[in-house]
Image (tube, rainbow, N blue to C red):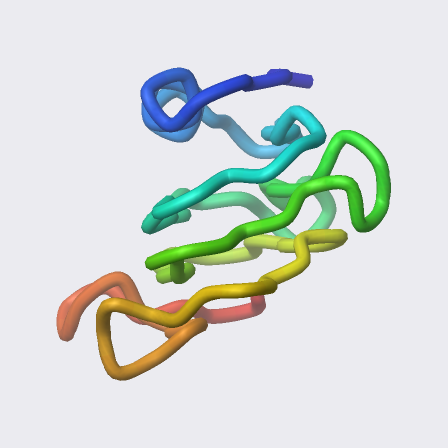
Length: 103
């Protein structure tokens, strides 16, 4: 498990994530956080992005989530009091070359 408290710590954790790892966002309001969640988990060991406690992470302001890779799980995050700075709040692709599958 990798408990992270800010976007810089998140970026470092996601770069190092391996199958079976969990990246846990510390409870609180994460304002203007554009999450890029990428990685390559496996069917029996996905990589997970979750809140410290269910519903304990609020993404507000200009926040969104882009997912790209394989066998990735996202849970327990809440979007509130904000909007996406892009066309999508949640995109199942990092970019045109990195779609999400088994997510």
